[in-house]
Length: 248
Image (cartoon, rainbow, N blue to C red; front, top):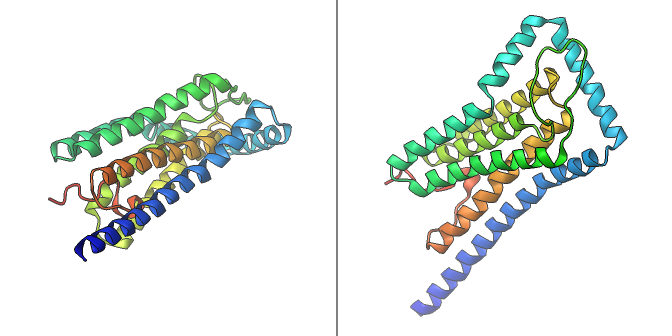
């Protein structure tokens, strides 16, 4: 009887794990679709996309040129929330987690932000898309354009930090607030890159999507490891990547 109950419990647990992993894979696929589509269109020089990007770039650039104080604000903001600050924040959070005993969580955070940065550089080299060339530029950026490193870094960094903080958050309102702040920061940074004329609109959409894909992929791998270790299946978007972290 006890063996039968244990077997049934194990089956239920496996079923729950299967559902969670399916959701994780679906999330990866969902955010991969816009990135892959944009990648194909950019590499094939799809004219309607180029025209769309050009139109948005010119309109937003005109707003920046009309108010140079606003342009200076965007230049400061885009660096304050640039890739390196997010890397520093994630590494600092990982060091904190490490000394609090959540060492696997710390490794996950560092691996995720590192993979995101390296993947961005690799795709930039492969695609080698030129940045916008606009009259009277208000900003400048080196290297290739697709996908946006700033947009990808903020999407990855905010998601990692939220997922590390969630085990310490109890209320639904607080969890939703964390995700709302992460989304707002991501959209704002993406906007600054286009408004400053250093990225096309499709660059930042691709960067945000790919940043989420990287996080979703490493979260799925971490959840699989937790299950292999005999830990209960978790819901990372609600409980964090490692729900038992900091609760000892």
